[in-house]
Amino acid sequence: MRGSIEVHRHLVERGVPHEFYRLERPLRQIAEAAALLGLDPKIVASAELFETPSGHVLALSPSSMRASADAVAAAVGKPRARPLAKNRVVRHTGFLAEWLPPVGHERPSRALVDDALLAADVLYAPGGDPGVMLILRSTDLLRATAADVAKLAATKETMDFPSAAAPGVR
Image 1 (cartoon, helix red, strand yellow):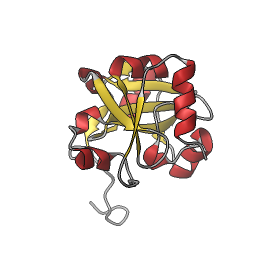
Image 2: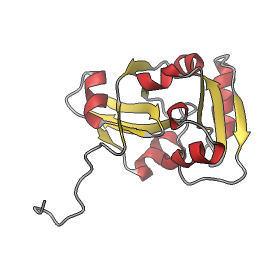
Image 3: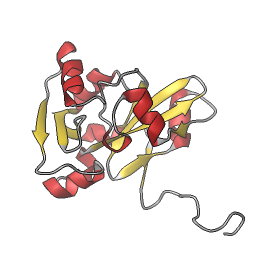
């Protein structure tokens, strides 16, 4: 399993200034970090990995939002994109899916950054180990990931999640 050392090495090799902050306890998901630290969720980046017909795409968006598969597909010019299962995220990146950092992955993926993240000067993101936060400037996140900027996210409250009802019942 990869961790914050690989994230640090990736950033150092690219000359990207950054810091790490260890939380008082490990968290299960990055979305919990904003509340724990008293941060606006719009400055805490969340990473999701998608699969398209031409390969994997890393989508970075504010932790209060989720990347839309349709928006990811449109941003890369493909007919479809689908989120990877957690076990496949681990196999592709070497990191836990719930604490996926923006860089340092075992296998590279094309990266997209939601334009909402760029409104902040400083961002927080998973640092590679549960409970370790990566802190860097939004311009440095773009440089470190070589990401394209796109509108990717919808708020978690407004997303249309599949019904928990039995198949065919709505």
